[in-house]
Image 1 (cartoon, rainbow, N blue to C red):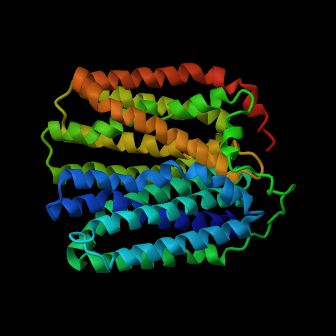
Image 2: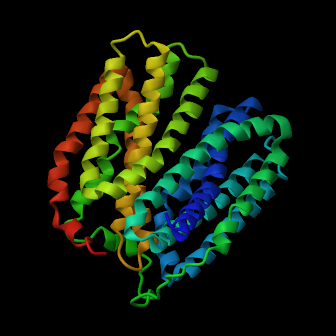
Image 3: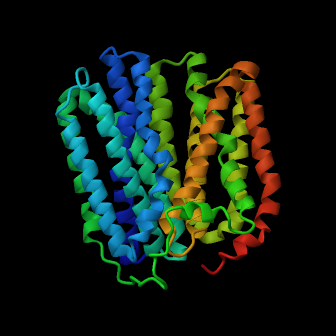
Length: 405
């Protein structure tokens, strides 16, 4: 692997770590800290509002694309937004959870808005610096950064909080964000190209035109369904382990540490595989793996749930999710219009988040109504539906229009 290519991957890994570790901390660790401080569940529920900017970030993605003609300008957006992110995190460290709860929530929303903007610019930056054959491994870095960030943010930082306390933890988190920006600040794109046409004609409603492309319906359906055979299981795996008699500590290790580590470990093999066989063949493999996972969990309900079977189940689940993520990111990078990289990639990932949210909400009701076994059967059905639809989706002329892009 060439030095320039390795530099790209390392730079992208640090960028995704910069946004994922603080995000994981605020969305998973802060609720734990709040409960330890005797906050009501209602107050903890309000904390979920901080995720709103990541759901609606497609609204200002066209503005980022409009003001960036090359990788250097996207890099500027990355550095400014993430530095602002670090400053806000540092500011939160001066506040007290008990007396300044509302102020902390407002600052978290502001911080997540900056982080979402960083993500838009980072995704576009990645699309522009990565050659076609480099994108699968580049997206392995994105997926690995997210999984490692979850592992660090939801596990290691909770331990640091125990020893250092709220203020020093936030100060350290802000410093970390700034340190991991060093690689991108030093990065120089030797093959930087000027745009073929001005981006000043990009509309604030550019995301609407993405959906008006001819025959895009099949691609949107693929994105919407791709995780469908896994998300319900991912959502219910912790309650499932609780009902099997596992303690909170055991569940934290099995799913939060072991499972996430398995996911992070499988991102690079997935990227190498996609790079070797291509998207048109890989699109069959990962849904089949997801279907296998759903069948495994269904079969697990007929066993005595021996511990090693649980570990295998969790390893398969998180590995399949990680590999599917690499595929989805790589496909989404290909289906972007020139000059609209940040907008189009953001839109596609938001679609997968939306479908995951819908399935996650429904999974609890379904498990209540038809038990976990019934939920796993439904996941098998959704996995089979996707596999049945793939031949029709990938014959779509829509993908041919992006073949040489």
